[in-house]
Image 1 (cartoon, rainbow, N blue to C red):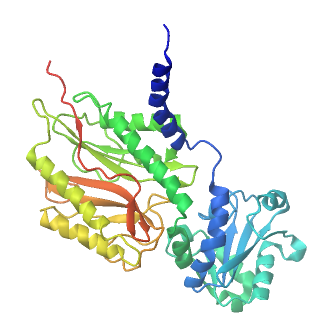
Image 2 (image 1 turned 90 degrees about the vertical axis):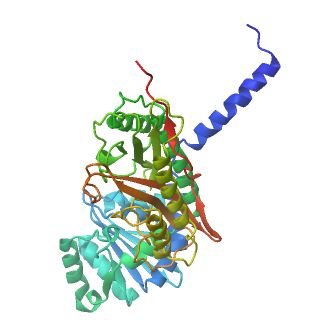
Image 3 (image 1 turned 135 degrees about the vertical axis):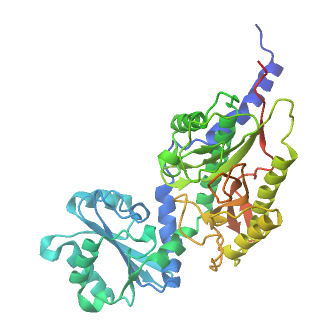
Length: 438
């Protein structure tokens, strides 16, 4: 068969968007994390330490039970016990890594730190090296990863006790938790990171929609959708955004909370929830929910009750989004969403409206919760819901005991002028055709 120039051009134009989309959502190449990490240390860490009123930050690193922030400070490959010391100079920092001889060459080649020093027993070992440098710098406040923030609580009791013995009483009295500076530092994402997360969010939604397209009412189980998404993740080279056993959470029946997908068969009249997140480049994660309705025979749209509840949840999320802006608070967004919930007749739910997302699905930083008064900043990224919950026939009226909740979850970033959705929000329920009559 002959192919004309016109038909060839048409074919290329038709294929081009697919090629562009595939390239945009390909996360299998070299990771941009090393250069982004350098920029984060150079531009964001100094101001975070200043705002937390910290002059030095000491992170202890070790093999097999490493600090949660090891990858953020260039210590993810620690074999022998090591340490990174950041010393603040105004709004900038200088860093030194104390390492065993087996890691020093590679660390110097990576260039994460201003200097890499090999410690030995004659110089007091690792802890002696930390003590001598802190004594010379004479910082007023020394942050360590010990406190009530999980990401900033990597120091074991054994490590802290040994560190305090090495520092002596004067320097030990200056130790403070790093929770404040860690939260301030990690909560702000660079523009390059936001773009990566935007691409990952697009892929997350695409996969959820692909999963819904496989549903055969009366045959497909919730667990089938979960297995489909697991297979697609493996094919695309991305990993789970949170605990693999509960990602994705697929639920076509009563509320199950954070849970694995059950063997429930999807039936006409069901409202289906997929709560799903992926991790890309081993660093950044997404957290997005999409909802679908399974049409009954003879239906071409959801019944009015289902549609009303969907719109209530969707509009509650929009009310929260409209409060997201620099200098605003998470409490304002949470309140706006809850006011809408109450006006729409929703039952209460046990969660806050939203949470920071980025390096973990539940990241550090200000939450969109009732008590949150911390000002939002440009670069904060959130996953947040609009909720509408009701009691199913035979339910108890308590959440999770015969309740059903629509919790349409989106992702947004704080911008200088307000906020921006990472992907277009879901406006309508995804409709799944009814099973054909036998």
